[in-house]
Amino acid sequence: MRNDAKEQKVAGVGLAVFSGDFCRGDEVLAALRQDTGCRVVDDRVLVKEAARLSGMSPGAIERAFSAKDSVFEKFTHEKGGALAWLRRALAEQLGSSGLLLAGNVAHLLPREISHYLRVCLIAELPFRLQQAMAAENLTETEARRRITAADTAKAHWVQALRGHEDPWAAELYDMLLPMAETGVEEAAALIGRQLQRSAVQPTEESRQALADFQLAAQAGVALVEAGHDGEVAAQQGRLTVRITRKVLMFNRLRDEVQAMLGELPGVAEVSVEVDPGVPHDRQAEIYRKHDRGTPSKVLLVDDEREFVQTLSERLLFRDVGAAVAHDGQSALEMLIDDEPEVLVLDLKMPGIDGIEVLRRVKKIRPEVEVIILTGHGSEDDRRTCLELGALAYLRKPVDIDELEARLQEAHQKVQASREADRA
Image (tube, rainbow, N blue to C red; front, side, top):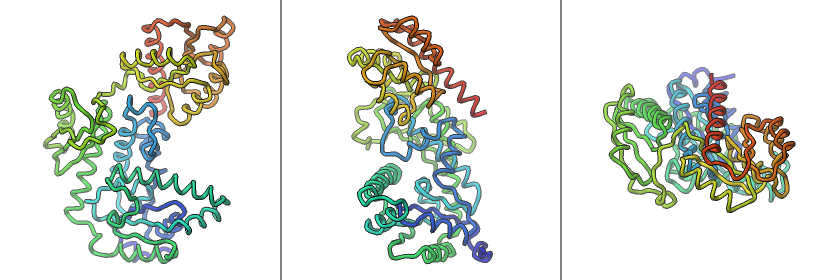
């Protein structure tokens, strides 16, 4: 039975809990939910809500948490978009009090919102290995691999948001609990006592920080929807947009962003600046506005390496973002990992041929549009491909204008389907 007096004392405050895998985090969260009556908002909940709001797929939203970028990232800046929508979804959730933020989403919360108690649950590796092996019947090698992969992803996430290489660093949290030495009930009790401290109660400053976060989240989504990519901060109605790539025509970019964001309710001023500390891996990138009406997730599948590379470059010259796979198996793997919208598919390839790839694509991801581009197909092949759901059947050498027109048709079909699902 919940302690109603305790629930009354924690009204208006919230929890943000970040846990290492196999550190009994789920058990502690269940105990906290029982003790405090807080509503849990975890990664799954926020991904689902961000996908609903944005029309992006849940997989694309989830990639924001991953250390690995999609092969289409340089064309779409999709990761930045996913992060903007996660912040927007969280900002809407924060309109309610008594939340328990659990998982990666705990680090989306700015430090300045001080009426949330930040907690980290972690343990030494031997304890985690034992927990993993017992819970999921893993070998020690399998358990170690699982934990290492999870920790790598969490470290990347915390580095990206907080600039800290160690996701378990004590300075990132109000409480860091060593779960090898702390039982589940003891951990929940310790957290519950800290929630009742006056230092965690809402203040005028923390409420303003929450309002700033909500405004910045709204502006971040507006920026993404207009095809821009930048980091937005807010302070009492004043927005600052930081660009982390080289900008060729800064004044035009600044004027466009200021005009757009200046129309948002509650915005008093907008400044745009290029971050002087551009990460090393972005120093060669030129800022490019993403045109949502242009195909940017096209996968070219062809074993003729020189041909397909040249085709990719010609399409990029026309602002069509295209990645390359040289065989059917690689294409099918990228279908799951990178979620292309359109495949341009050769028929004659070693291993899995184009017709079998088409058949599997339409079974696994029927919403993906497929354009056949081949120099060896027959009339029977053409008929088979169209019956299997190919959008078009083109022959090499292809007229680039015709291919671009077909790609645009495919992109419009995909976008229309997403809009229908969103409605």
